[in-house]
Length: 172
Image (cartoon, rainbow, N blue to C red):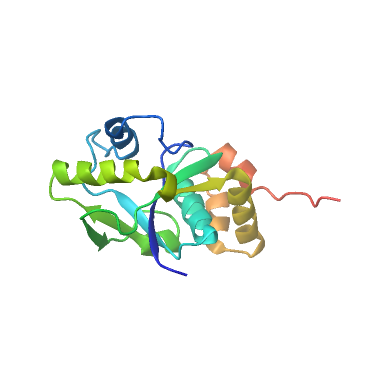
């Protein structure tokens, strides 16, 4: 498969119904509230399994509650920017090693990128569903993945995540 770079979306919707400026403000807001000049992306193999893994690990690392679904953006080959590998801050090795940052020298260049992304959202949108995320987490726990077991057993992990990590009874 071909290497791609995916931005894990902040919302369930892709952003088609809003202005490009509003899309940039909502999806690419930095920790300080301003437009992010170095947004994070994850390198994937372009397949759905890598996207689901990146979304699950990103969400488990940063969100209090598991996401119900996700709308993400494939930014591969879009506009002029530098792509810099940087160790991510997630709890999981896969996403730490595959973390990159887009680097823009100015707000103007960042907005040009965000406007180009907004103009091509329908072809760049990638989605994940709760069932996929749940199945991934369950598979990792069943495979005795130490990172996921550590996450599940961490006293700081929320009740909502613990419920998602709970074993599911067999069907039938």
